[in-house]
Length: 401
Image (cartoon, rainbow, N blue to C red; front, side, top):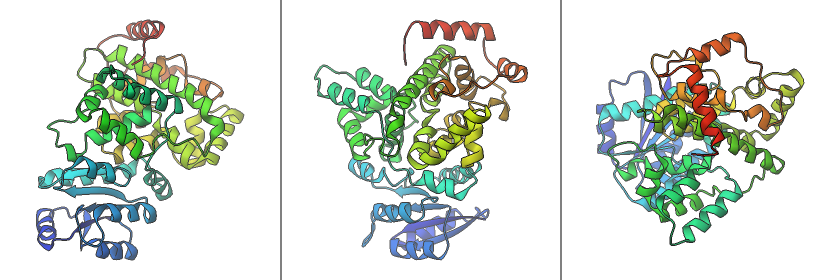
């Protein structure tokens, strides 16, 4: 049975949570009065999810989550707080996966916790969940850092200029969206558009967010892979361009572009947390002529797609984006009834000329007749030839999204 730990320094609030969630019999729930008691409970038996208040005496929510992050990294860390301030949110970003504002509806809180627990379906090995749970910041390309600093120092820069730089970097974009969609900003709707996110947060907050989580640290674990990662970033941009061409004017355009932008974020996790295993997977892919994702699964226990989806799910991104990232290379694993973000990303990914195999200098995966037929049968408001035409035209124009 999944275990959920609730932490607050007010007994009345814990009693209220216990009463409101009494029907959630599918979980084992424990209610800890203060951070010290919470740590005692964690030492007795690990938990799948920890939900904590922020402002508590002796040890506050940030300190508690920092301890949980270090000692029990496989635990999903959520903040449930009525304290809304940008600086507090900034301080919590490295340690909290999700933010929920109180008071909140019981069903809303239940849904958040249930979605967090369902993420285990992506990564079944506890050691993999622990590795991804340890991720607090991911390095971005140094060139992007320079561009962002220069643009922000320019008084003539506008939101569109900053958004274009942010959107060109997978890691920065993910963190900006994680921040703007946190409960600290009390948005009436979820933002998935980078320009809207930058406009809402403002230049200073974007700059402080990027610096506070040390996104711009160097690739200390694998410096020899930097050139390949620049090629990978080009691949991501081309997939995003293709996705834009396929979904322009549709209701799914923002989610699909976001999924395209983030679809390879799992590689950043592999390079940071599993550099040796990732290198072995590349060697196996080359030696046996198998897809890199297949080799990753054999050696690591999951592919970069599933690892990336798990991380994005921890950060609370929309499920449509998480699902698209998880299955973009094998969309047939999901039943499709309409043109959605997964469909758009899978088609875009299959139609770009710069594949991940080429990025890493590996043999191209042989596409079988069955795979080609499955791709062509994905639900879309246009035929396969039209999809090819749109993507070819967009890529040849040299535009990047």
